[in-house]
Length: 434
Image 1 (tube, one colour):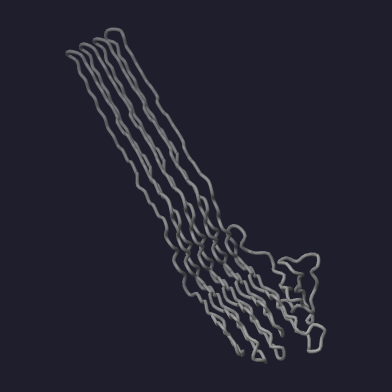
Image 2 (cartoon, rainbow, N blue to C red):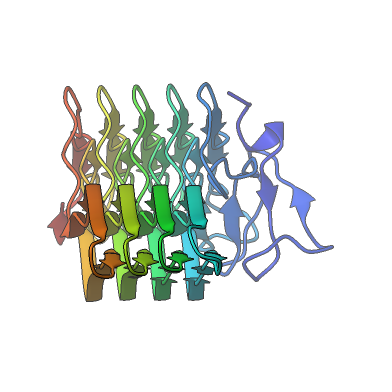
């Protein structure tokens, strides 16, 4: 942890960001009423994606001493003192606005024809098809990253001997899962048309033999995930820094003391607004025909082994799970004023949360429409004093199952701790202690 203000905290000119007028403050720096005092925070550890563990983000310790009586600025106080709002190991938010469309089309139509025109001739038509079609889709959008593990985000300690408008060392976060935001549409619409034709024709006294064998595997499965919050990490700590303010002579007021609001290991919210659509279509229509004339033989054999997978998994608006063994604690706040007119409007050391599951929000539609048309045709025709044989064997497996999950909150974690900090207030006009 760094030293007090003299160790590098910046006292800024009016405005929220340090400008060219920023200058180093000592323990006796004189402040204007509008001057905020802020520690120089390290970069956020939760901007985008999942984060690994073992990060630390801490605000610098800040101290401020009011000028003694008789100094040239006897009634000036600090407008704002901040050493909180640190982040470490948080998963980034995922935002998606628009459309993801997967629309594949396959038309497979082999034709096999054999014709024997002479008397006593033989016509053979053999067709063997091994077909594998993969139109599966994995579509994911608007997913928050998972929070990391073993991170620490702590507000620096604050000590002041003068009045202050706001003293804030809380609102730190560590290892939280990012929120997932989705607004739009994800569409998967594959189409397969499979139509093989096999024909054998023989004249009088001939033989017609039509054989067709089809082994077909069509995968139109879809996994669609949208608007899912990341899960919280494990073993994270988000703690507000201690605040000690002492006013032995002037009776200045502290309007607001904030050391709570810490977040550790919470699952991110999942928000979905739009549509998930899975519409798959299969037409399977093999045709096998054998025709023979007078005193002939006709054989039509068809064997079909078909597997069609049109299953769908659709997940939308799911809150991330809370992590385990996290701690979010408000810092200690001690205020002491010598005169009766000194006081504090608000002292807040609570509103800490750890290991909570994220909320799931869903508004829209989950649509799964699967169509499979399977119509094999096998025909054998023979003339007078002839023989006609038509054999057809079908082994078919069609999966049109669907799993649709929407608007579900995440589970809370285990072994988490979220206590409010201690507040010691020795003033005459305390308005609110939270």
